[in-house]
Structure formats: structure tokens, C-alpha cells
Amino acid sequence: MSAHHHIQSTPEDDADLARWDDDGAPPAQPRSSPAAWLRVGAELGDRLVALSGRQDLLVTCRPGTRSGAPAAYFPTLGEVEFDARLFAPLQPHEIHPRIVGDEDRYPAAWGVFVHEAAHAAHSVWTQPAGANPRVVEAALLLEESRVEGAHLITRPTDRTYLRTSARTLVMPDIAHPTLQGIEQAAAAAALILGRRDVGILDAGETRAVAELCEKVLGANLLTTLTRIWTAAHQCADHDATTMLAHGQQWCDALDAAAPALPVPEGLSDLLTGAVKVVMDHAAATDAADLAAQDAAANAMASRSKAQAQDCAQRARQRRKAAATAKSVFNTRGTVHPDGTPAPSGNPVTGTRRPTAAEQSAAARLSRALRAAAYRERTEERTTSPTPPGRLNMRAALARDAQRAAGSVPTAEPFTHTRRRNSPTPPLRVGIAVDVSGSMRAACKPVASAAWIVARAAALTDPDSRTATIAYDRHLTALTRPTHRAPERVTTFDATGGHHNLANAIDALDHGLELSSPGAGRLLVIVTDAHYGSDETAQAVTRVKQLTTAGCAVLQLTLTAESRHLPGTTLLHLPQPSSAPAAIAKAATDAIRRTR
Image (cartoon, rainbow, N blue to C red):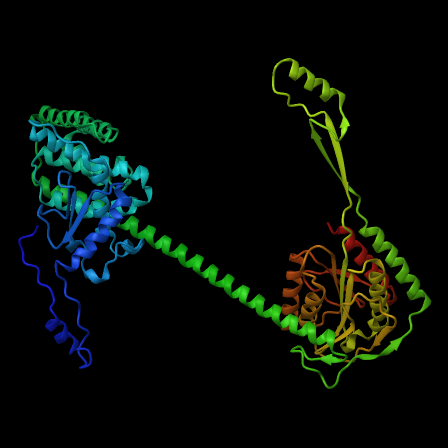
């Protein structure tokens, strides 16, 4: 225990500090006292369990340490001593090690703590009585990189913190050496190059120390020392005999080579400079890695934000489409895109009875749709060792042979065939017809086609639905997505201006579920596509969404001056009267392709 008296705050002190709350002075800062670090030490002890796998250790955290080192592990006391000054400039009330991830705010301090945790987990060998202190010191020098390498095996993600701790722990040892001459250079090699060989530091980062140590120690001695610390890295945690043997080899190698090696003048300064270069390179690499991680995190956050915004926009679009579809298909008249009734601009001119040709065309299309929707029954064959099923004599003989040979019979001589009817897919056809002034020629054939398709779909499958919307700046439902076959043909004229294809597609998509699989889906757009740039962009966006969802999109044009909407299948009809046949064929192909 520390002999210093701990100064704790009293109620009078707290009252004095409270008087500063409202007088305009800066906020009072919490006082840092040894008692305030007790909580930090306790929370470090909780995290030490996960880092070291031990539950019998105590962590003491206070400014300054008994050992004078930034941190130390005392095996005989079961204690890890930690200098609170490593957390500077953070105050104890700002430090919460129990929260996983809080360590990212003080990586240097946490790196030192991880290093001591590695000692607590792997430095479990004890020196025997009467051991040579110099040999023990050499073994402990080799232990520095050995425990970090062993720690990385079980916790590889701690490499970043161990790299940071190297800058905190190694530099003071180099700047204030306890060894001199050749032994100092050998110790620097063990601390730096040993960490290189266990994967803490990179080879390119340690080149300055490697070149200096080779120049001072010589290639042969450096190779011998490298072989010794590499062998020590493979030593078991409890094997004191082997570790001391490596320490003895270390001392013997230095004793044999030292007399013949001159000590360069200013060796301590040379080593300090070389190690500083290594640490600067490591710091630069870590900073670059951190910047790359931050950039990746920012990019991911940007993508997530963009995805969230896209989802929100799609949700708004779906809500708007639902409202538009409800107003269009439930109102007997023309509506604005926002669903409010339009007082004028209704293109519907009336209704008429279908002609004999139209009734015949609807009947033919119904038969064609029924044939296209037909699916063969699927067959599923299974085998079993027992009935029911058809007996396969070859498999039966194989099973008898297996039983006679004393093995477990695996042959299955009975075959059962299960036939299932495939469901017939319904049909969903949406027709959007442009009723601006330039599309007057399409009015009669599209009105006929809309009735033919709706009639044929209703006769083919009760689950099939079609709908037709006439659009200019307003929307008008010509046929509605019901299960009943229309009795009369709705006629209309094209006298409008501007265009509103995007909202027409939204209404048809929501009313017919064109974006949902499980049905033959087709959207037919009858237009010359003479739109403004904004109108075209909005329409193309809807078309792309439908095609991505698997809905076929067909554009019918009647004049050579017509433009092509990107994403649609363009079909030019020189004769407007061929529009019903073209739409019928496209609907048949759509349901035939449905799986």
C-alpha cells in the first residue's frame, strides 16, 4: 500500500464547489485523488479476466508505481500495478474500462495493460533458488516478446494495442539503459526484432534497428541471438528450465563475441535514434490504418444513410401510390396526382357495347391465356426399403446380398412416384395510355384492347386482374382491377396537355401488385414519349423498379416520331388497329414466362 495520505473531498468542499455553478466561472473540474482511481483499477481488474483468463489477480491503479515502471506484474502477489498517469490527459471520471470499446480513447494505456495481461497469462514459470541473476535477467528479456506472441495466438485483435505499448515500454528502456555496450545493442535487438518475429511489428518498420544491430553485433552474433529468441518463442509457459537454458545461451553468446567487438562511440544515442525511427514508422502505419478504417466506416455509414434514405423514399412513394390508386380506382372521374378530384379534363366520352369482333377476340385471348398458363404436373420420385411403391428387382437383390454378407442393408428397392398439379399463375395487366393531344389516333384501338384484355382475363382465371389508366396531367381510370368482366367498352378522347406517367405507373403498380411475384405481370404504355426531362426521368425510374421486380414493360408507339422510354420493350405499330393484337400477344407471353 502507498504510504501517501489520500486527500478526499468533504461535504464542505462540495458546497464550496457548488457555489461556482451560477456565477459565470468555468465549470468546476472533478478532483483527481488516489481514491478516485480505485474504481478505474477495479474495472481494469474486471477486464483482466477476459484478457488473461485468470480470476485471481488484483489491479491497482494510482499515480506512480512502486516499481517505477509504467506497469508491472507481480506473480507472487497476484497483482498488476498500473500507473494512472498513462491515462493523461483523461481524468478518472472520464475513464470507464468496464465498457468494451472505451479503451479506444486511450490506446497507449490500454496497450500497456494488454502487455501486463500477457505476462499474467503466460509468465507463469518461476526461477529456481540459486539461479544466476544475469541468466534470469536474460530470460526475462526474452520473455518480453514471447508473451506477446503467445497472447496474439488467442487474441489477435489486440495487435494494434501491443504495437502502441511498444512505443510506451521500449523507448524508456532504450533511453535509460541498465545494460551497456554490446549487451545494450543485444537487448534492443531482442525488444524490437523479437517483436518483429512474433508479428507485433513489421519487417519494414524495424529495418533501422536491424541494420544498426547487424553493424554493431556482426551478422554471426545477430544470427545466433535471433535463433535464441526464436527458440524461446516456442517455449511452454511453465518451462522454467528451458527459458533459463535460453538465457544461459544468450549470455554465453555475448561473452564469446564481446571481446572481439568494438563498442561504437555514442551507442546509446545511435540505438535511441534507430528505435525512434522504428516507432515513428509504426506510428505512421497505425495512423494510416486508422485513417483507412475511419474512411471505410464513413463510407459504410454513408451507404447505410443512403440506404435508409432510399428506404424512406420508397416508403413515401408506396404510401403516395396507395393513395393515388385508391382515389383513381374508387372515383368515377378524373383526379389530380395527389388524389383530389379534378373539376375538368375528363377524357372519357362514354361507353358502348362491344362489337362481335371484340367479343371474338376476347374469347380467343381467353383460350390463349388458359393454354399459356397451363403447367404440367410435377413428379417426385422417392425410394424406401419398405412398401408402398413399385418393386425394383435389382435393388431387392442388392439388399438381399447385403443382408447375406452381414452388412447393414442400404439398398431401397421400392420406388414411389408422387405427382402434383402445378398452380396456374394468374395474370396482371396494366395499361397506361397517353391522352395528350398527339395520341388521338390511339384512342379507339386502346379502348378496344383494354376491354378485350379485361374480358379475357376475367374469363380465364378469377384471380386475374387488369386495369387501364388514361393520363395527361390528370389520371382517369378506364377499367378497374376487379374480378368481374366489363360489360361495355369505355371510350375516350385525347385532348389533354402535359404528362403524368410516373403517377399512373404507381397507381397501376399498387392496384395490380405488379411488383409482387407469383403472377404473369405486364405493363403496357401507349405513348409517343414526347416528355420533358423531369417527366421522362420519373417515368424511367418507375420502369426500372418494375423491370427489376420481374414485370415486363412494353411501350407501344404509333408514329415514327415517337421516342423510346429507356427500360421498356419498344413495339412500333404503323397501324393503330393492330394494338389489341399486340397487347394480347404480350399478355400471353408474360403469363407463359411466369414460373
